[in-house]
Image (cartoon, rainbow, N blue to C red):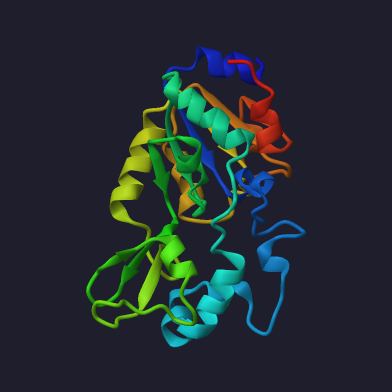
Length: 236
């Protein structure tokens, strides 16, 4: 069965995506040969992106975050646009994403569960005031709340932090009720997010990823290619 045939017969399709979904929009992934984690400096990126490092060294965290993570001018690629179109047509029930770039929403998707948060949402740790990504980009050094002077933290899940409970519940419910699950652009090496696939008990499991993953042999269909080029070529 082809991907086009699987999508056409699906009525409760859910898309589970990782960093590879956004690479065609110019946002680097983490673990490929050119990924963010291969760019070694004095402090490893994995350390910088931890809650412990943020609270101990907020200035160093924000220097890295602004340069590598706070990408506000990226545009949706074919994958994002196709998924938004499928939602509009009633084919796609939800997007579950490990990405923090907000490109699914920018493309028009409405039911998106952002497991790792979003660069577009930021919160004062003292008074709870909210700030946009654009507001953070205009600041220098460690951003402080103009209302109370507290440090502002991005609403992204850092290493050592739990996932948001409400987001997890929504994502798990969507995956559990899906008849088709497309897993794309992810190495499935980040937990607990990768473990959510165990909740799927539907008919068709599809994988789209440039490299092999631990679930390749379990899939109805396995496509080793780019996500945007694969989805963009479908006629649904």
